[in-house]
Image 1 (spheres, rainbow, N blue to C red):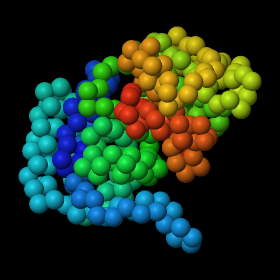
Image 2: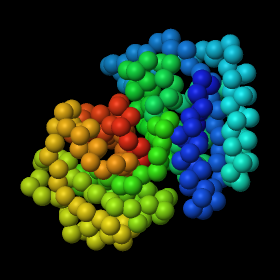
Image 3: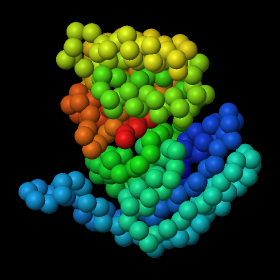
Length: 269
């Protein structure tokens, strides 16, 4: 569970607490410094493309982070949860996240409060960069996280989307009995790509599975459509490296992440 210096997310801890009720987990609290936004630019030409973030720890970081660590350890003890605390300011934040995620099953962080001091647009770019950097799946939750009563799987027929389904099913068998929608959003095919194969596989891991193709305008209709499903959780393929299809990367998933509409599970190889 990753927390930045300014924020301790109740939603992140609530997610871990609920998972611990199903089966014991080992909760690693990763406490990172605040980032004072100095410079964000995109490189062109021969330079590596992507946002660059310069960090300047704020003066009272240590005090606030130590308070958050005490809060974390108390909550873990109250909920009989095994835990460890990692605090390291000697590395760049993204490098630290990459190293920690290499040895973790899943990284949980708040999409609504993680480094919000960067401002909305920069915050979105920073979270996207975290998603590209991690070497394990990521669960993004809001600070008011509630137990999902529906799973929505974003499927585009690609290896990436099937990989995400596998990782979610293996990591969270607790969600097996929840109503699950496997939804194909792309308009490039008449039907759902390899429907028979994906239905055969997904039905082994999700007891209440529905599969269909959906045509909506994400900018206009997404919130209304999601509101029909109570408290859904979205499962999606990678958000970087080779990237989503244009439909996913620029519309549906980006809109969900920007507005913090629902919890999102993202996995890439």
